[in-house]
Length: 176
Ligand code: SF4
Image (tube, rainbow, N blue to C red; front, top):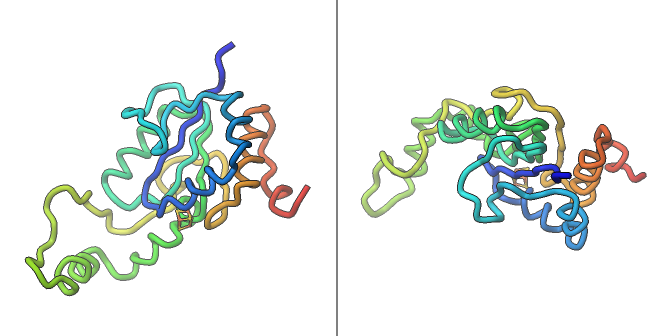
């Protein structure tokens, strides 16, 4: 029997949620004996495949690149998890929302720069007017809060999903 296919995606986040995933330590072996990791910034797969069973999405949707990616991920994924507070609420990336993109870009690339200040026109993905939580852009199946979510919480979520149970992260949060 084929194993469930698991992916993780990194949008506008600090990678702390992925670091917490790695903090599962030896429990990673338990999870990935039961599932195949088919895409992640932690491994070298270049393309997000079709037919993903579970995807953990870290970070808010802040750029056109994020928007394109999360729509594609949603289309190809059965159970999409908003992974951490940036994905759930927009959290830290959302702090730029009241400022507006032009003022933000000026501050970052002109006002604080001494050599050749200029707004980048290449390489840096074009920002959306505001940074949005994932559920504002696509349907989310499971919300996993925390900045970052603890390794215990991530393990409980994956253990439940791989066993076909509805995730009970609230109980895990308060100890079960
Ligand atoms: Fe980083 Fe916290 Fe956002 Fe995760 S929720 S990406 S740890 S700021």
